[in-house]
Length: 259
Ligand SMILES: [Zn+2]
Image (cartoon, rainbow, N blue to C red; front, top):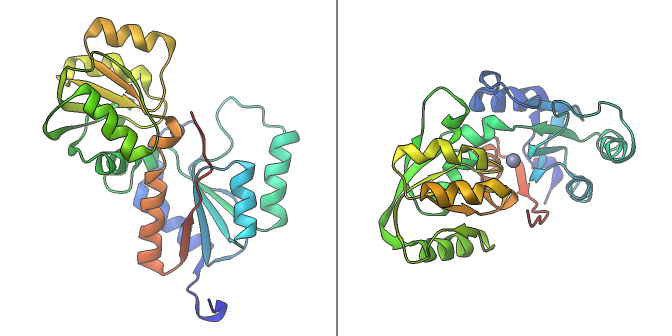
């Protein structure tokens, strides 16, 4: 690679583009969306990842990235704002190396093309109907259908093949599944909301103890397919869009996480 001819973009232009694309200001979120930590003024290379953990930041340093783009960034509502220990180490890596941190949480779940929900539907080969638009947070829940009816066990296998991780499945394996609702990440609390919309199964990332009982008693198949595993695809689609649009180098770095 010849550094001199590689495309670059000014940081404010990059941030403005993504903010506008994802309509970041539209969301009431648990964290700030957009530029969370400011690094150098020009961006040639971005490391994309699910979570801005220390291992991802180290990868960004090794790859000489100018920015890190993630779904799970920093400064979550209710967290201790003091910069100590783990937080100090993370911020030190960013600031010392002048690497920017861009974080997009709900906007990157919800986008109709680049969002985690849209992309998970694509990866699992669902015919997406789109989000449930009832004006609440559950408009992050998408619905869709399978090409043909398959058993609940076959759907579990499809999820395992596509995501490289066996899901937790609650329900009778031989039941037939045709219509599905899904929401990436930790959206197990939406299970009760989808009971009434006429789907056979609900897929999200995580499960809670009570989720199992709700699924059993409401007669809905439930799949916990992994928080990390279900949220790897939005940031990759966004990175590809940035490469296609600006010619900048975007690389997805997967830091494995079994949850
Ligand atoms: Zn998440």
